[in-house]
Length: 109
Length: 113
Image (tube, rainbow over all chains, first blue to last red; front, side, top):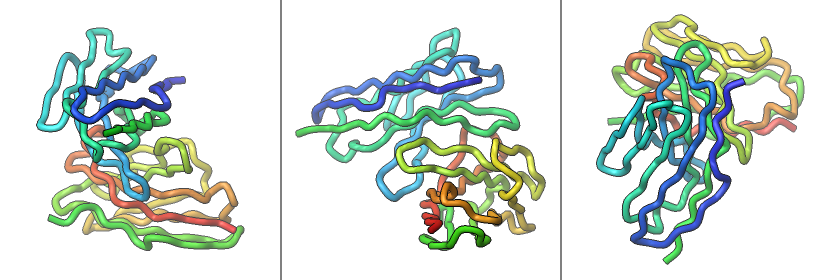
């Protein structure tokens, strides 16, 4: 059974870089890896998506090694407003997106 | 541009009843997916529809059904509600049905008593 595993919680401070790593065993060839951010009482918000190597956008970077069994979301210079739950997901085909249980990221002043 | 919209925002039902949840995708998006999110867990995939056809189904009982209309909006129906159906129901839309590029609505909070 394919699983997506990520740390339950992480703490950091404003201005720091935060890296959250997710492991996804048995990832399928057609699966993309996508990270979402979720605030209480809101739907998940798309952050970044990748298939392999490194992807960067205006808010984050995503590192995926060659074996694709893990991925690391990198958030540069976090602020208090980045306090949220971050979900790693893998998906493709008829099985939909498979989400991890989420990482509670707490940013302190 | 308007994002994904869902209605109602909140809903309280009694065990055994039926519920219909509605979703309007982002303009131009032809694919709609439904997810169930139990408190403290990640979303779980229920259905995906693309161009009005079911493209994928998660591990949910037949009490759950859905459809997509010609304007690409969608309904999720749940029959014979159980207490365990209490959750946040999320709708996500995407342009092409590529699984990763999905944009979520705010969800419908369903409480079954």
